[in-house]
Length: 137
Image (cartoon, rainbow, N blue to C red; front, side):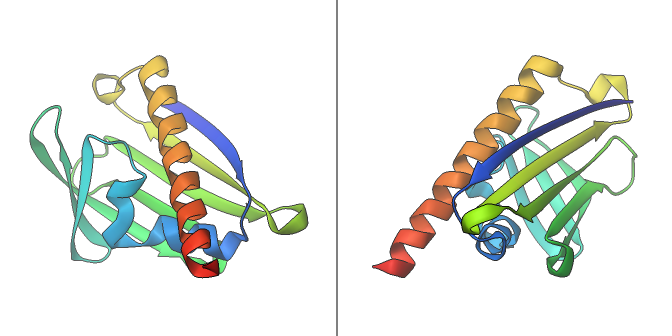
């Protein structure tokens, strides 16, 4: 098993960040750009990967009380992950994303995963910023 984890601070309250991250209709705005999630009847979802043009049955759970998203493959135990939002000083938040690959053949490698996680956190921060600006204006 291989695990990866990345974190980022965002200048917004944890509830705002979590609501943006957990919005099933907006997951494509921050997740890795080659992944697309289709809800079937939560927690069941299908994840389409552009690179392989394959659909994978998966599960996605949002626990607002814990400010946590959890996901993973449904039928095969290939991977799992979570996103945790924690409040820090001055109304800011720290967002941590963790991925676990249980099969070596499904692990794209440290460089690719790190790049994807950093880009996803960057896009999420941008979505949170845009939402805050639209709400304020």
